[in-house]
Length: 103
Image (cartoon, rainbow, N blue to C red; front, side):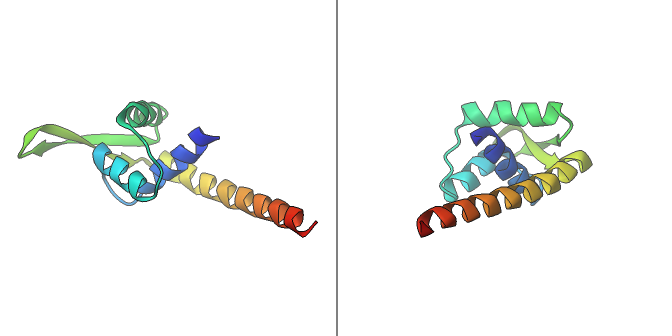
């Protein structure tokens, strides 16, 4: 379940525009979702290999070039589907938990 949640969160962050992995980690931490590089990089590779992400190399003034990620059209479509599924799941959980508290 956590894997699916990470996917939608990371795809959502990347959907806002090209982004460097350490900036993804920062945004996740700000949302109180702790993700470390050892989790993020394999996930980005998996999403890229699935055709959901693309990347470009950008020269850096302070070191080697940096890899910036963006969504592909396939990634944008999947994110739309994931958001629908997420909304349905939230609705189901809310209905279930609200019923349990009323008992």
